[in-house]
Amino acid sequence: MKRFYRTVTVAAEAGGFAVSLDDKPLRTPAKAPLILPSRTLAEAIAEEWRAQGLEVKLDELGLTRLASTAIDLVSQRHREVAAEVAKYAGTDLVCYRASHPPELARRQHEAWQPLIDWATLRYDAPLETTVGVVPIVQSAVALRALAAAAESYAPLELAALHLATTACGSLVVALALIEGRLDVEGAFAASQLDESFEIEQWGEDAEQTQRRAALKADMALAHGFIRLLRG
Image: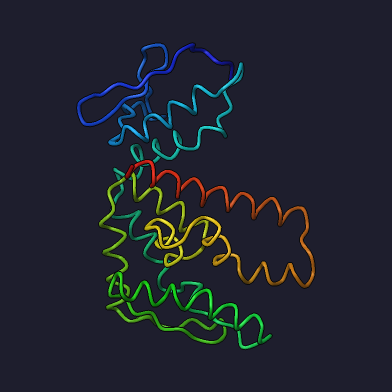
């Protein structure tokens, strides 16, 4: 759509900070006020809008989109979204190891075991590992602990965690990203370890390249969003 505003400003409002386009406060798609609890995040969202040219490109408004999702959807379905995120713990990819080739098994252990150890200490959530893809049953203690961790997030944080979890395909990796245990490169490497190994052997096609780039972009958006929110 064509750019319809000239100026973008940030102002303190009750409950946080609002971003305005020509003195008209931004609203979500559901028409709720886009009020951000962090000035740092509000300024970053304002910068997304300032950076638009003659045409407003919605795919360049990732922070705005994620904040709107949190306000319109996550805040209304908090427990349901947290439960959806927590389900990943039951079959988390970091718990399923290859027996061969030995190099892949070695890489998996070196990349994933420290994350399992971290989750055990950070959330009191000891996860079991196995060789192969046959599902194993994780302890109720670990699953409850990780579910409680997801549910403890406020709506904007939970929106970022949900995005990271779906992009990583792993709750453990996503939590490590959101909590600063991993950076974006580390989270991408951990979550894409198996596919990256296969690409080393057989090469990468254009569709894979595009899909992996999109996943990495989602991880970067979730990571950046949470840093700005907490900044």
